[in-house]
Image 1 (cartoon, rainbow, N blue to C red):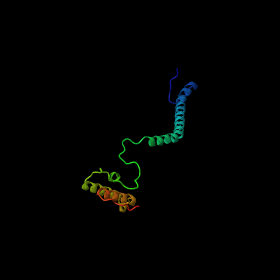
Image 2 (cartoon, rainbow, N blue to C red):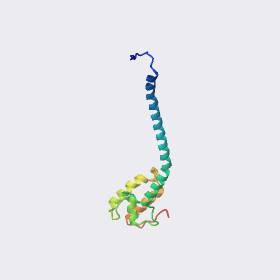
Image 3 (cartoon, rainbow, N blue to C red):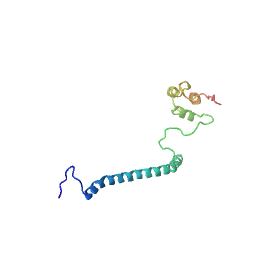
Image 4 (spheres, rainbow, N blue to C red):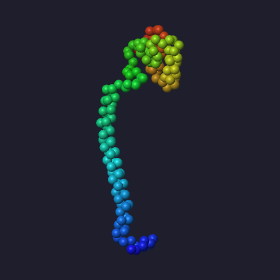
Length: 139
């Protein structure tokens, strides 16, 4: 049996065994990349129908833990809607209602980039909860 010296020539069988390791590694890596590509392709193809069905499901099932009012404004603001706009109860005292109005107006004031429409609705809600039958400036 010949000893393996650093510069000794290898037999054909020894060189085949040595070179087979890196080649099989490259094949496995190539198969892994191909599998990842096919998986990504399938995910892209399936994502559109899945997103459409998720949107239908979201519309069909209302959000159970939603703290936000779903829907637009009523044609004539009621006391209930005014309380929802300000985030208070309909039977709130004047002091708490004014605090809520001030807090919301600071966030939605038109001079600070807020919507003039929302500011008018917030002011209308305050007027209704104060006891007046406010007419909307938007009508």
